[in-house]
Amino acid sequence: MATDIIIQTAILLLTLAIVFAIQYVPKQTLTKHRTDHRATTQTQRHLSRATQLLCRAKSNPQKDQSQTLAKTAITEIEKALSLFPKDPTPHILKSLALDLLGHKGSALRSLDLALAFPRVKSFSEKERVEALVRRAELKLAVNKRRRVDSAVSDLEEAVKVSDKEGETKTKAFCLLGVCYELKGMREESRKAFVEALKLEPASTLARQGLER
Image 1: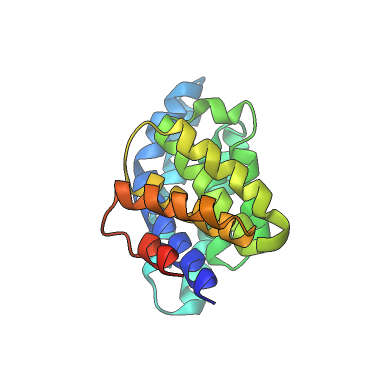
Image 2: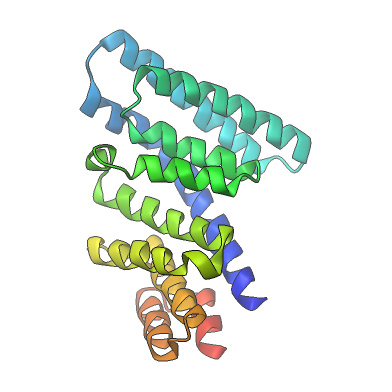
């Protein structure tokens, strides 16, 4: 039960962080794929609308209204995908929308598409790390036991790729601790939580992990 709470809390926190950060992604990402100014402008407009809708959906306490906003966001995202299918940004936003709708399996598949070659080449280091950690979280949410090894691979890559200290890297170590715990690797789990505390001494998730 405690493990489930940690995973769900981490998913919520990272989702909020990505929703906030993603507002600045479309322009940066789309410039790398600029082929036609008009198409780029249209795509950016669709992604901007989708981002605003997702933020409203996430903050709306009414489930029906939240889901309606998320579905409308998906419509905007699909329009962007029709213009730039090789851009990873729409897939990330679609994953967030699907997760809000409770479709975690589909959300995971959208992230798989975002992280697939050649789309992954468009990511900055920070974006790639965030996407890897989020994908690991979704894998654990979909099926902890069957997908734990795959989640570990994503998280180990995330902490290896990331040269910067920050909230996302701390979460990666916390989730690694959870994964190692699920695999019965108690010493590795302890070390992961310790690394998380080194990065963020106030981390509740890391402290809870060490206390179990």
